[in-house]
Amino acid sequence: MAAVTRRYFGAVLQQPLLASCSGRSTFIQTPNARCLTKSADLQDISEGWFSKLLVRKIEPTKESHSRMLSDKQVIYALHTHNIRPDSYDKYLNNYSQNVALIHSKKQDLNLELVGSWTVEVGDLDQALHLWQYSGGFQIVDKAQNLLAKDEDYQKLLKERGNYLRSRHLQYLLAFSYWPQIVLREGVNKYEIRSYSLKPGTMIEWGNNWARAVNFRRNNDEAFAGFFSQIGRLYNVHHIWCYKDLQQRKETRESAWRSPGWDECVAYTVPLIREMHCRILNPTSFSPTQ
Image 1 (cartoon, rainbow, N blue to C red):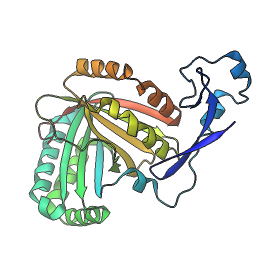
Image 2: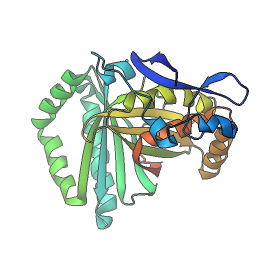
Image 3: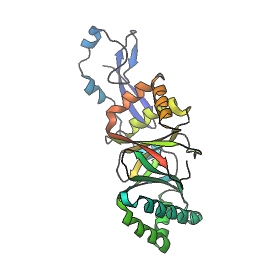
Image 4: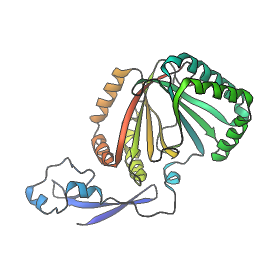
C-alpha cells in the first residue's frame, strides 16, 4: 500500500493511498469512507478498518505540542466547583465578592474573569469559572503569590470551602485556530463539550478541528477552544454560545449538511476516550452573558 506524507502544525502525518470509486487514488480520511468500493478493491485490502486507524502516525518532533497548537502567551484557568445544594445562593454571593476583589487588583495581578456559569444540564449543582492570565506562567506565579498574602481573599476562600463538595482546577491554552474570544451580551446559553483524548493524539485533533471549526464559524456560536496544560491532561474543551436550545439544535443540524463536516467528525472520533457536554447559564457577574 502506497503512503504519502502531509505536514500540519510542524507534525508529520502519514496516510495510505487507496483506489477510490472513481478509479483515482485518494486519501483515506475516515475508517468508514463514504464512497462505495467494488468487492475486488476490498480484496486488495488486507488490513481491517481498525488497523487503518493506526497507520496515521505522528513522527517525533523537538517542539512541544502546545507550541505547535497555540500561539498565545495567555494562560486560562478553568475552575470547576461542585456546590452543596443547600448552599447555592451563599456560594454565588461569595464568588461574586471574590470576582470584585480580584478585579479591583487587576492591574497588579494581570488576571481577569472571562466567563462564569452554572450548569443547567449535565453535572448539576456545579459552577465553572474561566479566568485569563496575561503574560504566561510567570504571571500565574506572581498572582498566586500576591493572593496568598491577601487577607480579604483568603477569608473569602476559607468561607467558600463551607459551600463546596469538591473543586478542580485546570490551566489551559487556547487553540490558535479558534476565533478570538468575544464577550456576548443579551440572553444566551452556553455549551461546553469536554473530551478526554488518547495520549499522543492532540496534534491529530488540532489538524482536523482546524478545518472543522470553519464549518461553524459563520454562525458566530464558536466561543472558545482550549486544551489542558496542567491538571487532567489530554483534555479538550470547546465552548459554544447559542440564543437557546432550539438554535443549538438547528445549528448542529446545519453543520451536518455542510460537506466535509461528517468526515472531520468521523476522523476525530477514534481519538476520544471519553466525552460529555454541559449546558451552562451565565451568572449575574459573568463578563460574558
